Image (tube, rainbow, N blue to C red; front, side, top):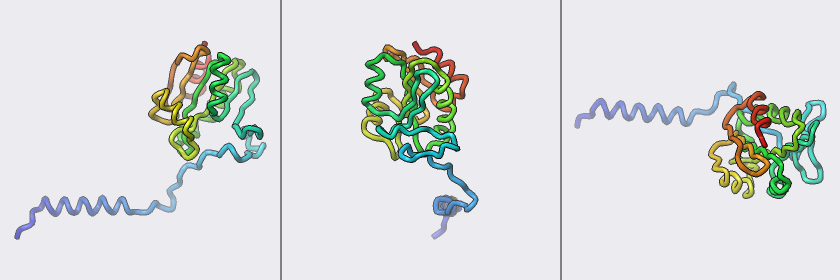
Length: 177
């Protein structure tokens, strides 16, 4: 029985692929730090977020009346009922883009004097609950690091996916009605 060169090439390729899948990560490889969980206090010297002890929400109180909080269905519904413009940041605690974008977003929200309600919505991570999954489905979210900007009447002004940067965030905030 003769074995063809194609057979050997196939077996060799599969063996090499299998070795790559089984290899352990190199000791020098570093993974991104997980995002801070809102249930732990960040030392004040790090300039971290303040925790609302009553509701255990990440809150950024700003110069104006804008707020940035971890999403709850009740807070979101109250903001809609009050006619506030709303920004939804669909965030995953394992996502390096989300982790990098959040401080930029937090800074821009803290510098607006408008009565905007911004919510960080956990998406496809260990903190995601059923209300967050339902909201993501409502807005047809398919990727974390998605921002939805809603006008005060509840209509979608715009959405962005990925890194925005301060200029884009400011422009989108300014465009909200």
